[in-house]
Structure formats: C-alpha cells, structure tokens
Length: 246
Image 1 (cartoon, rainbow, N blue to C red):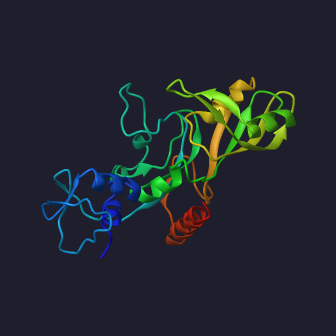
Image 2 (cartoon, one colour; image 1 turned 90 degrees about the horizontal axis):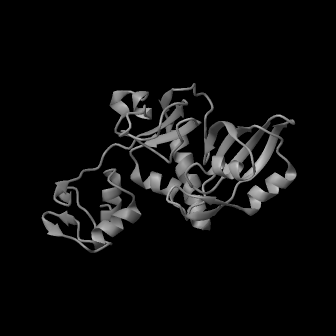
C-alpha cells in the first residue's frame, strides 16, 4: 500500500512535495472523505480524487528529445509560434519537458509524465548539472571565466535582480569567436545568454548536451526516443544520491 503522496505522484498530477501541499489544503479525498493526514496509506480498491476528479496511477514514461532551433518549449503559444509539440509525435503529447530551452537553443530535453522526477530535476534545492556547448562572438578569457564562476547580476523576466553562476571550460578560443562548455546548477530563464551579454558577448549557438547523467548521445536533431530502463534506474539512483548528500 503506497502512501497517499506517492500515489498522487504516480498519477502524474504533481510531485510528492506538491502532493503534500494538496493534502494539507484539503484538496484530496479518498472514497469521498477529505484526507489531510500526510502518512495516510492507499489501498488498491480506494478511489482517490483531486478536487473532485478521480486520479489513477499511470504507466510512467521517460524519453530523450533533441530539440531543434525555432521551436518554443511549451504546449501552446498565444502568439502562434511553433512549439516542440509540432515535432513530437501526437501519441507522446501527454509528456512534459523537464525544464526549458528558448526558441533558438537546441539540444537535450528529458520528456516524461513522472511528476516526481520533474520536481527532483528542477527544484532549486537540488543542484542538478545541465551542460551546454556555447559559441560566442569574441575571445573568452580566464577573467571572464572567473566572473561567471563568482557570479554575475542579471535581470530576470519578472524584473528581479539575481546573481547567476556558471562553470566554464574553453573548448576552442580565437579572437573572433569562442566555443565554451558551460555548466549550470540554476534554472533562470535565458541565463546563459544574459550572463554572456553582461560580459559584452552575443551567444550565436547554444546547445544543451547533458542533463544530470543523460546525454544527447545517439540522438539526431528533432528525434525523440525512449530512455532505456537501465538509464532510468541510473538517473533515479543519481538523484537519490544527490538528495542524500543535500
């Protein structure tokens, strides 16, 4: 018998952490009775509802998608722009992306209906690395690398000022352009582009090549394919290890 929060997470409705909030808010009922006890256990025959709507466990799916440029990472867009769901097969449109890539960026997106995994990979308290290959229009120096590591103040889309950090490793440097591997542990929208802009550079190419331990290896641009059970198990083990250390 699973705990109620685990049962809710298994339906894909949300993460366990969010499920706890829903339970405490009185939005979950079992067999018609509101349950606010976090340690409540669900039996196989129980009927669980979220705000009156029946929710049931679903088969959890995990995919890797190589996002091409020109698509935004959302289900629908009020401006009529193309979204990643114009590329992804219709039968997989129930999957959600783990994080986002802006319109002109390319690379890895993990796609899943596992709300718990999405929360573990994106929650600010869990420092999961995202690795990018970035090309800029100028010469990147050790001084620039130090500034990015120590923190650069950027303005978010909601006009908040935040200190953004990034680890960098030069791959190819010349006077006209530089290719740099960038590792982020934060999740600020357009963070890499804004950080380089503050240093006087324009990002001309931005590709995510790795998220946690999952990489783009074996994927072609625009392709989506299921993760192997071994990969899912390794990813879950990796996240558990991070949480145990936290």
